[in-house]
Image 1 (tube, helix red, strand yellow):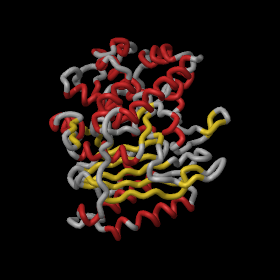
Image 2 (cartoon, rainbow, N blue to C red):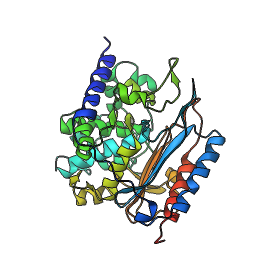
Image 3 (cartoon, rainbow, N blue to C red):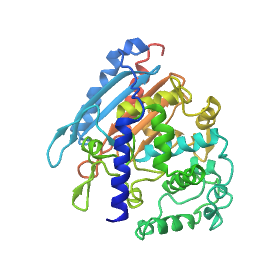
Length: 390
């Protein structure tokens, strides 16, 4: 059996076991919008905006979940989960390829957990934790530089770098040279988060999928979140486009993550709206969900503080205000932070309002087109407009 196939089956099986036998599920309670100070009539406008976007073929369907004060105020599904080869309606428990939401939810959160434990410092050079990374004059790049995309690394290295086995792919990543001087440019980089995933593995002694499973998802009771979902979750997954003549469903769409076996720091995570609501509640709760804490309030503050970058503001692993913030909307507070994903996903959190807005779609299905960032931002604006205390 090919090593990649064996790993996919083995980890997928382990993920399935975890999903059913470890950790009690702790879904957030669902309440009427008025119970958390939100106006239902404003939130009702979301449906017409989504319907218009579906009619204009910007997406086949989506799930929208809005939470406040640790409770779900709005949670609806729209349109279809699948259009080809036949239609399947979207449902609220659909599983989504989160694409670049992997960066903050899996990788940056893991980095902050390790920082909270005192075994990693975000202002230390990356090469302290992965010595091979010092090649090609990268010895001064710190973990923070990677988290805020000011390392000077290329956004994506050549796909050919991944065609010769996983070990060779990492050797080539370690040998990449910066394209611009350190700190001079904000350049969103998948490579930077690939490297951060490797740092998590080197510091923790666990693979990235194992560490995130054990230290994030089990901790929060997110039993349907992880890399390499097992067969049951794959059946519920929203498909993307085709690869090698088959629909990509429950398998990472990103080609580099795919060639790395499905586990990477920049992409590869799968989840559901209900699970992500638990995570979002913990982040708006300054790292804590009920009695379960990912990290201390001090580390939460470190993760979410503003970092000024050329032409914008970033948090550690999160967007605040850059050219990528169209899915944020315009009405959240200055303290809001969030991120989007290429497949059509978005999560924005506003601690000032104790509010989060989650948008999940498979906008690439079926033909790799569609556009949802503006729609996600408009939904975020409606969420803020619905607040009674505004």
